[in-house]
Amino acid sequence: MRKKELIIHSKSDPLNPELGFGDMLYLYNEENLKFACECSCCPNPYKPSNPKIKWNQFSGFIDFGEYSFVCREHPEFGKCLLINNGGKVNSRSYNPNKKAYHMTGVYLHEANIGYKNPLWRGSRGCITVHRNLYFAFMSNFYISEIGVLKVVKNFKFKQQISFFVLLNRLFRRRKG
Image (cartoon, rainbow, N blue to C red; front, top):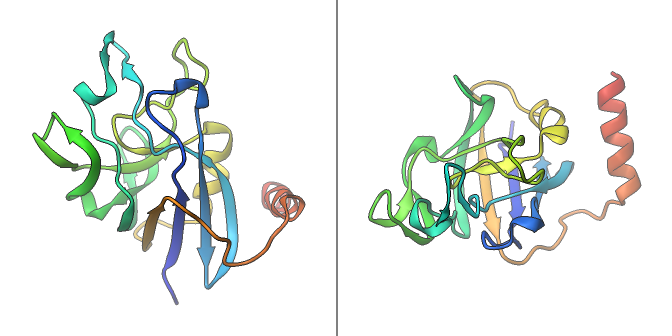
């Protein structure tokens, strides 16, 4: 069986919290598009405990590139994807926590919504998916499954698919 491929078209910027989930996630299995939804590669725009501390003073921002992932159970996030087995992930910006241009312990997990901003991503450098779509997305993975994650600036569909086909697939999955 071939590894699943997760492509994230990264378009958003951590300085624009109103964009919320401004990136797009595409999940392919054997060259077939299985799932698509909005997501965010961006860290939160500021530290929740102190809005005066901006994102680039406490976090990195995942860089464009290719990474591995494994589906794991996390004590806080539940079922999620661990990027590069928890090791180094390149950062587009200097990460003060590591004093370098990388991060460690990066996951793809459910967004932590519940702050004053309803579009709060709830991340210090992890990739997040809105909680309304997260469980449908994660139903495509089993624990210990591995795959490839590509974070890209420009994206071309491998397969043409309409929005209505995606909705139909999601609806069938929820009913079944």
